[in-house]
Length: 332
Ligand SMILES: NC(=O)c1ccc[n+]([C@@H]2O[C@H](COP(=O)([O-])OP(=O)(O)OC[C@H]3O[C@@H](n4cnc5c(N)ncnc54)[C@H](O)[C@@H]3O)[C@@H](O)[C@H]2O)c1
Image (cartoon, rainbow, N blue to C red; front, side):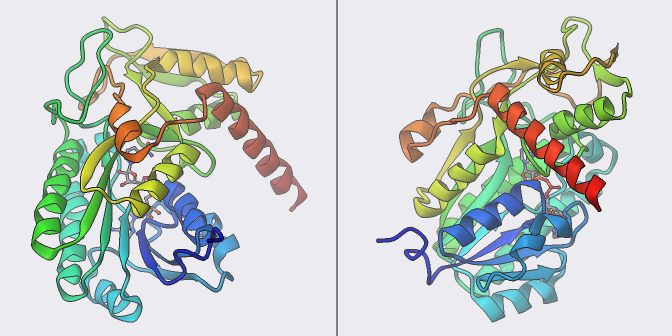
């Protein structure tokens, strides 16, 4: 069957669909033939991320909060989605440390309000987004965090994402839907906003373009900064496509399986963008996990997924995107 026609009758509700990752997902779902409902309150999402989709006959935008029960119910009643892809969240570890109640409200109350709608309007599939970085186990040198390891749970964000996973498993049985839980590493790529820990690449890029010094918060025993696993948004989109088509009631890590120190990333960015701007190293930040790299073999085995874009190639792509953006904004 031709690509783009198979899923024609399926409707997917993408919460956070106007955000960095969500907007790439809306594009993918439309390309695959899904009727796509983008649900977003634009707290960090942007109209410009989805502007090019607004005229698509299968695309519908609902500007509302996931904690707004009436708005949610209206969307479930109007569109009766078969699939929920839940990306809307409070996504910052440091913000969750400062504002645990807000994190709880967004990440768990919001989820439970969606689940309350599912009770009334049954769905087939729930794709839930969690964080492999925040839920990493305590790693020794050379180890990777696997899905069955004990998470450290050292920030409110880690706790609410972990609890979200448990709610999905519980209600999938009770309300009879299939699920896929994707635990992302640090995702990067076009349209990412320069905030939160996972936004380290756009934060560095913004500073570099402004010729402004960046600050690296490092533990004394890790002078190059904490380590992280970076996965390109194109690979993340593919994991969502596969997870939507084959919701196997499992939790899988989605990362590169490669551990990068933040200072090394900074230096790679300077090299790719051919820039030379200094970085200052200071003390560590509360809630930060020291080392993070995900074991990704389960996603390979169960979803037949593996990352295709190297960090260097991803940064080269980002450079093209940023240069296009800059030349476009000069024209207008
Ligand atoms: N970017 C990463 O590296 C990363 C890593 C692990 C997990 N995640 C998860 O992926 C998801 C998307 O992250 P992102 O990086 O694309 O961030 P983003 O901020 O670009 O996207 C989040 C979107 O959700 C919307 N949103 C937030 N709260 C909402 C609410 N109450 N109601 C309606 N819409 C709301 C925002 O406006 C935004 O469009 C989040 O759940 C995040 O926790 C991201």
